[in-house]
Image (cartoon, rainbow, N blue to C red; front, side, top):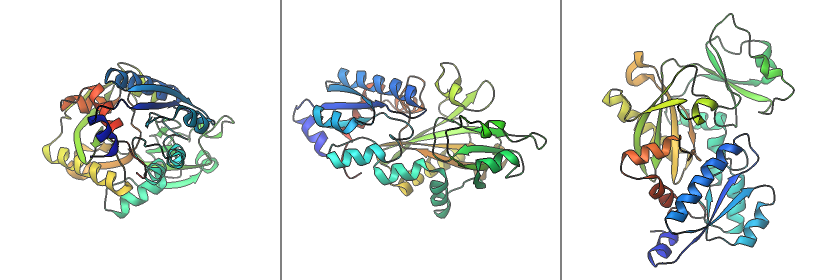
Amino acid sequence: MNAIQTRIDAGEKLHVAVLMGGWSGERDISLMSGRGCADALRREGFKVSEVDVDHSVASKLETLKPDVAFNALHGAGGEDGCIQGVLETLEIPYTHSGVLASALAMNKEISKRLFSAHGLPVAQDRIVARTRAAAEHALEPPYVIKPLCEGSSLGVFLVLDEDAPPPPELLNDAWEFGERIMVERFIPGRELTCCVMGDKALDVIDIVTDGGFYDFQNKYTPGGSQHILPADVPGDVYRRTQEISLHAHRVLGCRGVSRADFRFDEALGVDGIILLEVNTQPGMTETSLIPDMANHIGIPYDKLVKWIAQDASCWR
């Protein structure tokens, strides 16, 4: 039992600062997650301050003096170890993963190398300059283009046809996703995801969209996707997906809640499970996956948020 839980059990009303917003491309989603979590914490009896994070966040927190920081940030600045380092410096217990695990998970190149070194299944990829990826196929199609350090499918493109040119958006002056990108072999099949909560893998969800892939719009628009829970896959595939999720969580050193995303090629059976990435700050909106998984095992949204807050600590 950690110090936060001990104080709650003693009847102490803790002050939680919910960190949301930030400056990444996922700002609006973070605001939705944060407000939902803040409301849940209030219903659970916590004193709550909502903090719209900017570059003066340290001084804001020094003024507020919260007992706990609930990290509801997504993307750069909030999911990559930066805010975690600030909270360690201020000695404010915080939720989700720590500095190193957050930084490792956010960088797709490094995290995939770690997964591969530990025997976890990943797709073939190449890291190239975006100008090169725009000039020629870095891999034989079909392939996926991904920024190295973004979430919510921002800056992601599918190149499925060998006769199709590379995405012209790569040369757009407004491109803001970095000069080095990942070109990854496209895995046909289905989109699976699995949550780890504490030290336990929860259920597996099969994500079904009406068309295209599980992009930003399908993720956050009500009705943009269906969450089939539990996923209708063979038992060995289900169990192996859970095992990989927990192993990946541990390889990175994650804490609290994380979510592993997969592609599953049914034609290959259990060998068709491919780990894409681990999210250390999963979304907590009404269309998000983690609340669905928790609710499926009897943990409603408010209790899930309370559990995450109770799990807070420093030196994560």
